[in-house]
Amino acid sequence: MRQIADLHIHSKYSRACSRELTLPNIDLWCKYKGINIVATGDFTHPEWFKDIKEQLEPIGNGLFQLKKEISLSRRSDLQIASSGSVMVREPQHDNSTKFIFGTEISCIYTQGDKCRRIHLNIFFPEIKNVESLIAYLEKSGCNLKSDGRPIIGLSAKELAKICLNINSQALIIPAHAWTPWFSIFGSKSGFDSIAECFGEYAKNIFAIETGLSSDPPMNWRLSALDKITLVSNSDAHSLQNLGREANVFDFASVSYDEIFNTLKNQDKKITPMADSAKGGKFLYTIEFYPEEGKYHYDGHASHNYSLTPQESKKYKNICPIDKKPLTIGVLHRVDDLADREKGEINGHTPYKSLVPLQEIIAEAFDLGRSSKKVQAEYFNIIKKAGSEFAALLDLSLDDLDKITLPEVVEAIKRVREGKLIIEPGYDGIFGKVKIFSDKERKGFEQAKLI
Image (cartoon, rainbow, N blue to C red; front, side, top):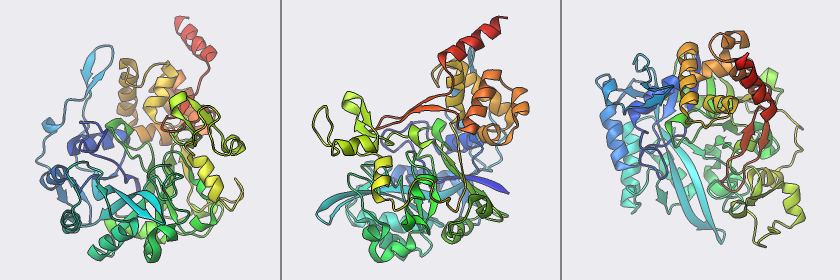
């Protein structure tokens, strides 16, 4: 049974996150998206943990679901505009969304005479495990109230030790592993290897999150990652961004142990992608096109200047405009650590690169993602297709042609084929995706007039 999992999201209590990120809303939008398993996010925050205990109930396998007595009326009013302002018809509430206890923690500390800023995703199967971690962090003087993604002074190694002592099946996954400022391999404050970061606990790190600005082929360039499972998650700060990256499993039954063991024991041997897909429980990851991520290229956002790694190296990583060190992006950092050439080898877990459906529709209409027309068409499609992922992954072009406009069908086709023009992101600025030329859009408009 196919299960799509987004294992890194946030709540309304995290900095720069939507106030609409409540558990009932997350449950609802997982149904819109077609997500089966989602992390709770932010479980160390006292108010969010209170919500978790009040609103979720165990389903007996290390996973949780929204309590049945929580009515749909508790959801915030999600007004979706079409030609007029209308309410989205909510799907039947069957508690099918499964929650896993997962959070992101920011470790900021000094090691090797360098300030390290490492973000880790931590997962537990039991509420008592979460309570134990919260108690330890509070006793250590960590301020858990300030942010859903707390900043602590413990090292990544120390946090791993604490979590594994609480439960030997704690799942520890370095978050967005390549981003410059807050990651295990980040150019500004990271390490050159998992062993350097975690020491004797490196053996307990069997997965990393690739992040929006890298994809599996970039990570396959490092032989040191051959035995590491590559996962992809949304790191969503809003409901609409849930599932922009995700993991697709084939589980006969879903449980925390099944997720843990699949990530730990996934066939790590480098084999052709077609062979590795046969019989595996980890089917593939759903990826951003990495150029769309906001740290793919090098550059300086302050004066809208970006460079390829080759250009940066020519300038010795110094910005030719302001003469200050460049923010070295993910592509450059991968190139620095890689011991293989691009395309030299195919990795163990397949992947599919997509653009979120709202972005596809917005590009097809040449409108903003939040415009009334885009939102109306988005909910028209998911109502008829069943979910966003059904539209993006499952339906044939002929089936899509029956439920949406020709320009949207063509846009989905081009995304599936990778026929995009993307201006790469850099230094905190997302890349710009272009599917149609201005001339093509004018052709669509003229066709409507005929």
